[in-house]
Length: 264
Length: 300
Image 1: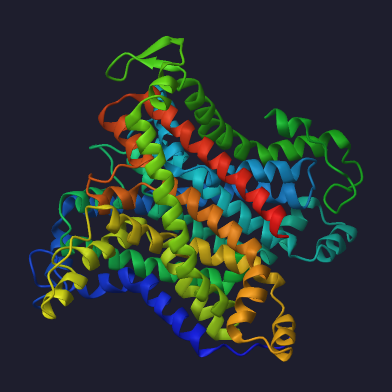
Image 2 (image 1 turned 180 degrees about the horizontal axis):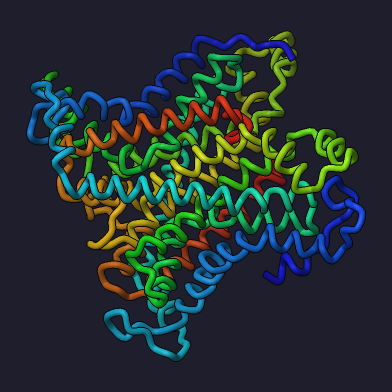
């Protein structure tokens, strides 16, 4: 298909809307360097005081530690759980695989507020409220759909010929998987790990239901801070989160491809 | 586990066709591979959601105590109460407005992306997807910085000698913030549905003398309707159920279904009522889905 020239009117409209879309994220960066003791834009002076205050804020630092550990554990578990499932659905062509895939991605269709409430009520009875294992299980429910989606896409895009050749030459199924399938799936697995980490690290609504004074994640601590006072401290944390997001988006683009993962 | 146990596999593939590995062992392997995900899904998704449905038919006895008997009390007290009727209607109307604004704001970006190529397209895609993956708390905070009394817009207005406006802690702020929050979803849905847009059809119309405006309304818009329908469905359901942005930008003064669910669950501790309101959200989802499939059949 030939290219169609982009009209100036469309170009202008697109750029205005891009400015609208990116304004809140971009604005956070200068605010984090504000010297004011409250949030005002433009700031009256510049400083690093909010980054220093962030270091001294034990609540935020503690929440950052919890979120990082949580995201790493969720990332590893998501891989361990979703990789075999993706293999069974794509390569073993389990009967009802399509339906299973729909079931496993269904938690993404449910509003997080409803899912959070549903999990809160069950976890309250099971004593999992405001516990680390409780958070891990709840995060897995929303991370697994992403992991499974990227891994099934990655696996179904691989030529089966290599695996068949190795199998014909006498390799056991496990050897075929370990020596042929797994190395070829590497890009998809890197993308899965990056996305899983980020989805868990950023999750706010479900965590809000499941955290308490004993255990808090970074997005929840951030939310509660903004609810009380919207000072530039939040901007300093936000800049860290934005940098992390950008890194993950670039990793996904280099490995699984942005269009394949998010558009098709 | 029963789903995997019942699932048989077709042996006509590389892994299953090993000599000696019979049908039974393939089924066992599939069960083993799918077991963990089925366990997590069942324990933390299916069971809690089913439990929530049941809970909407039970009575709150104050605090977090819940009665044993099943009753329709929650449903009748929400569906026949003027406060909740108003809340549901307002949530739907606000979400429809946000959906319309999101569509208008996203369409130019999606069309422009559809017509871009190579590295430039990738770069633009990064700009669309990065906000999507940035925490809603961060983006809402950015909007507070723009809309607050001492924020970007009001300081600009003051510099021009115009009187400051109240842009947060009311519906205006919630609508602006949510529109921007939902744009990436709309853009990606539009892009996925733009496949039918063939530049040759547009050129044909131009050659036959149609003005650019006419080409847009008579060719581009009808051909992209599937994407528009999908994007609107997605934006609408996300708007109805969004919580962080209405809570922070509404400052506790904008009441929507999602914020009410949270308040009932966490502040009032009336879980059966929160469960009923959640089910009402799901009913609205279902209605939107039905409307979407009707619309899709009409436009294709």
